[in-house]
Every structure is written in C-alpha cells, then in structure tokens.
Image (cartoon, protein in one colour):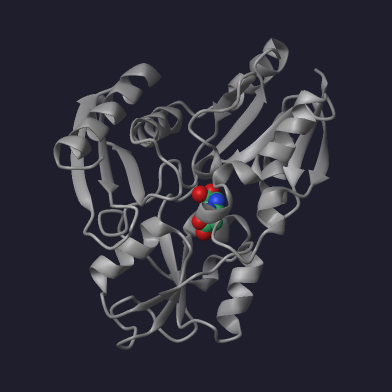
Length: 301
Ligand SMILES: NCc1[nH]cc(CCC(=O)O)c1CC(=O)O
C-alpha cells in the first residue's frame, strides 16, 4: 500500500487512460493521484510528427517528472512508446488491450468503398496513408493532427470526407457511435501495440514494479512484445510505414502479420506472416524478429 503519483498528458484520452490505471490500483488498496502535464507533442500541431522528432515527443516530459521524483509512473498508449526507452526507464507492464483495429469515421459514408472518387481522407500516420492508397489509389490523403476531439472537430467542420483513427481511443472516450467501419486487420494492418496501454517507471523502482505486476495481461503482453520486436528489428520510427499485428491461434500458437513500406510512402507494402508456439515474452520477441527477418529477405531495409 503506497501513495502512487501518475504523470499524465492532459488530453481527454490520456486522462481517461491515467484514471483507468488509477482505478485499477485503487482497487488494490493504493492511494493514487494524477499529475497533469503538457508535452512537446501536444504543443506542436502544425507539423507531422515524423518531421519533428517522433513518438518520443509525448513521453519526454513525463520521464523528466519520473526522474525528478515528482511522479512515480507514466501511462502510455503502447503504440506511442519508443522501442528502446532511455537508460534508467522500463516498461513495468502491459495491460489488457482494447480493440486494436483502425476505424473509419465519416458523417456521410459508411465504408471506404462508398467514398466518392477523389474523396479527402485525413490521417497523418504513414502506415495508414500507404494502406489506404493500396486500397483506394484515387483518394486524396491529407494530414490530420491533434488529439481525438480536435480530429473529430476538423472532420465535422468539413475539412475531410472521412478520417481514420484507432478504434481503441474512440471506444475509451465513449465515441464508439462515431465509428462507421472497423477495418479487418488483414486489410488495414494495425501498428505495433495499437490499443494497448503500457506503464513506464524508473528501472530502480522495484517496489513499484511489484505493485504493478498484477495489472499485466499475459496474452496481450506477449502479443505486443512480438509486435514491438518487429519495430525494434526494423529500426521502427514513425518516418517509416510499418505495421505489426499478432493474434493468438488455438493451441498456444501466436501468429504475427507485419508490413513494411519505403519511407517515401509510394511503393507497395511488403507483407509477411509468421506463426510459432509461444509461452514466454522472449519467445514472442523471437517470433517478431523472425517476421522482421522475413521482411528483410523480401527486400525491406
Ligand atoms: N497516434 C496517436 C494515438 N496513440 C494512441 C492512440 C489511441 C489508440 C491506441 O491506444 O492505440 C492514438 C490515436 C489514433 O491513432 O487514432
């Protein structure tokens, strides 16, 4: 039983996620408070993330708070957590994942197929850009940044015919009714870790790591470990279109699908699938590395 301070960004989704972890820890008898903060990633809204320094932008300020002892843990969308954390930090646990799929949101069109020729679709993820262009080369894909509410507002103002977002964020914020279609993962292959939450702590906080252990979801920890191993092996950053999605099959088999595209974002994606029996996180990571190796053999760099 201890007093735990959660460092969190102040977007509605970040606060929801921090409060979710707060409630889980409170159920176990901990006293938990939130420390809200603004990160560089929240401030820079006019440029694409891949151009201004990538995913790390959302976590640096939170890590500083952990380093200085102003907070104990940081709750992240696992998708936004860099593959290698800075020295002295560790991912203490991965929680049960929400829907990992991408979703289409549009006021007038129910599916991607129903979008008119040349329709404007908003997304800033290179992965989504390339996948969308594979499906519908005629679409005009335009950048879309900002938190979920901002993105939905830009759609509602008419700047786009449709936008593509992670289903998980919409569901967490009670915005599931805005989803017109959730994409089949085999068609819009999700990003590594999409839909999962990860909790970061200072590596020297053995006390906290022990308190957090009961929050971990074993199956999702292993599946996301495989996905993140693909990104790590490919030197993943958001300047490269990369997708990795692992699903459990019967009999303890884990199947991973991965896709890679040239950073120019024009070429077709290379896709691979690997499957193995997995009963530990290190086996899951080995499966992810095999998928990355297969991507390289197919021509990825
Ligand atoms: N890239 C931003 C981001 N990071 C995490 C989520 C929410 C979904 C999740 O937890 O994966 C989103 C929004 C989105 O991709 O639409």
